Image 1: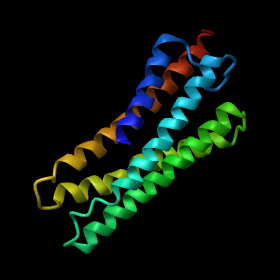
Image 2: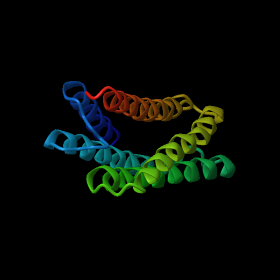
Image 3: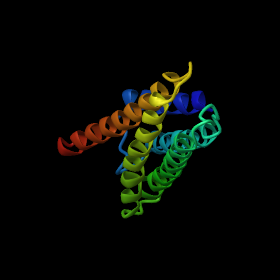
Image 4: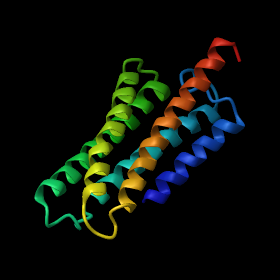
Length: 160
């Protein structure tokens, strides 16, 4: 599931490199494909985070396990909100839904920090694996959204 999310988001990134994607003013099939890939990647990421909640090697510590599960549940919900907001704003042109995308994206990033911290502080051999994945997701989501936003805004400012 995680590999699928990464592949879809990577495809969206490649598409954005090849063409000038206009997320805020889509007018051709390539723009709509980029919007659909972004939301599909967010939905797959939400499913991945939901499935990661079942990682049960924190069973000896109820507090850590609770923080892990709630953090990933909030992250999964936020990814769904961001994906729906992206579709509603950019595809269906519902302007206020942009706030759902922004708030969902930021909540997704913030929600994963406690899970990463809990995993780093947990004893055991897999202590580093999960936090690195979560930190990678955090950086990837933040950099991807920031990069696409800056590129699109720059193109709009210069009339490209």
